[in-house]
Length: 259
Image 1 (tube, rainbow, N blue to C red):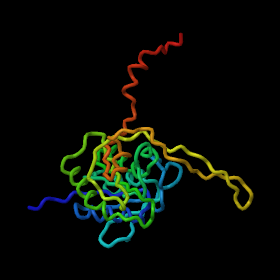
Image 2: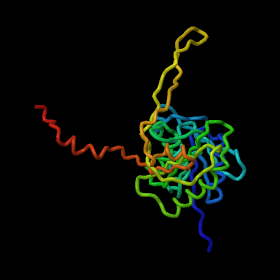
Image 3: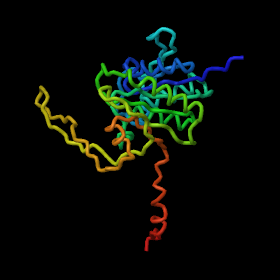
Image 4: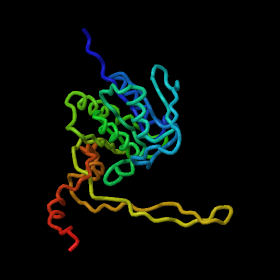
């Protein structure tokens, strides 16, 4: 008797027509039975936002032959919630994969990322989950060098599982770099320092356009930033428990009695 194929939920934040999600679903079709639920328009930078003040719409579409696909009017996290509750009807998929994002999600960027938040929501639902991102913001980005790694990483997660409340954040170097292998590493201490360019619209009203520079404050050779800069695929095990456990003893030494 043949072994049943795993069910795989594919989501993203760049929208259901993004080239990155097409690559991801094609690779996942080599592994299991795929269902795609993705935003009907780009939702980059949405983080873990959910829709609570307006109706959500979920429409089945025929975008690629032989693929069960749904477009959602909400956020990437909404897509996962609706998939689990309305499409899988509580019978959770074996794997949730998000991406492949056009642009990196490393260092502190994971807090803003819709790609990673969709994967985090999968992990919250106790589904083994992975977020995939590529160092190329172009709509015409070359994803060809990611395919074998995406497949291998997904297969390993299906085979071995993940620690409870843990997901994987996977980032790929640009196609211009020869991949040197995979590094399991930590999130770098790095962030964007924003500036806001002041401009005037045609009606002479002021508006702002966010710009900024990426500042690396971490010279460790065990970080995602270092791995990517040196041609490696970075894998960061990520958790959604944001408790600063190391700070609990210090806070317990404080006096909270108001005296």
